[in-house]
Length: 270
Length: 271
Image 1 (cartoon, each protein chain N blue to C red):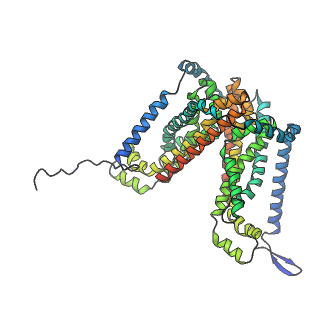
Image 2 (cartoon, rainbow over the protein chains, first blue to last red):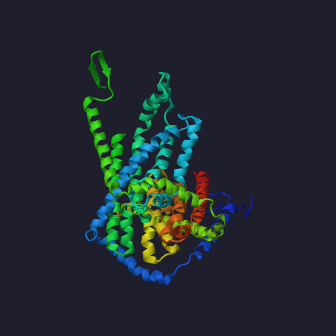
Image 3 (cartoon, rainbow over the protein chains, first blue to last red):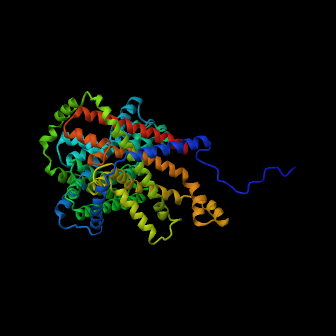
């Protein structure tokens, strides 16, 4: 026992939790740093244009704080009616189509061939963004809310059918077993064993999708599929930031209302 | 359980007559509302265009194939821009969302009356407005280019990351935090040693998840002038160059699949 023994460390350092191996850790840090430098370097910014724009940005903030609901009210209300009706019909149609597809895409109650077909439909619907589908559908069906209705219905299928199928795959098998033991047919099995278990979740998902569809309906108008998005696009193009602020506030209000009422309805259903 | 008296004795019913009547009335109102909405929505629809759609679809389909694969060369630079827009936007959004999440979480907020509602409003406002609309606004303010796209992505990400993160903060375990507090740690040390280790996995998971979503969104932001693949898409659409449109859609699809794969791998490794 000599004085050369290593002194007991007086300071504690927190061990790395995410990536324990230091070589990997510093390697990843370096790679990230190099990427960041390259990425930031390749962003071209016209600072003169940004400087000029700051004035407009300030006007937008003012417009948001003092929204102008009145001078464009006719356009805004027409856009809102289109958006809301589009959302309601698209959600209903989407749910009606996605329930059979969701049942078909559940591995535990659907035959293998049906399962693959339904999973294919879901993948196709989820592959591309709403806005791209809207562009294609506007090219086929012409401008207006009908193209928007089709876009939202199509997008609803991918979302709802996928989650419904996952829900059905997660049901309590004991109940299905009990119903099957009574000699129930496939339809009776779905009706008495599966439906009661997934219904509260299905209602919750439908309300959530309604919310999403409304938000999306504000976007697809930009490419000509009807709704409040077209009104908003026009307002911004004309630099009427006070009207744009009013529209954005209305969208936020409707989304908040939908979110609160849907949480209320979900509590009531469960 | 309601029981109904019939000629053959009592039978079991699922609902009382009153409940089934109410349910029936509810469905009636719902169907009527849907039909009414349908009528209002299709008031101005030109049905000729709708019946004509299959021919239009066949026509566009025949123009879209085969895709012009040689166009991919010109897409590499916009692809790099798109990925940068998503990555830098996510980073910026996460950096802003972090303090907002701590303000919004019930257990860390400095004031329940002022700071928490304000933070929650920022989160809801950011979540209600799609990144395309943010981009539309920012392009008109800052001019077209990647910067507008990056900020649009960041603004949209604040709400998403903030919401999930503040829920994670509210779920942290109090005992560990009290243990750190008992050593006499300052507020910053409490955040660093008490909260951060508990929320770090959720934080990285949420960030990567949002990055994956942002890749999808940044691919189309160019439609309103914010740079990247969407700009090429807009250009090809406006000259009706359908074979190029197909190529761009294929590139977007490949990028989305790739980012989904990366995010699934990373989240699997973390959680």
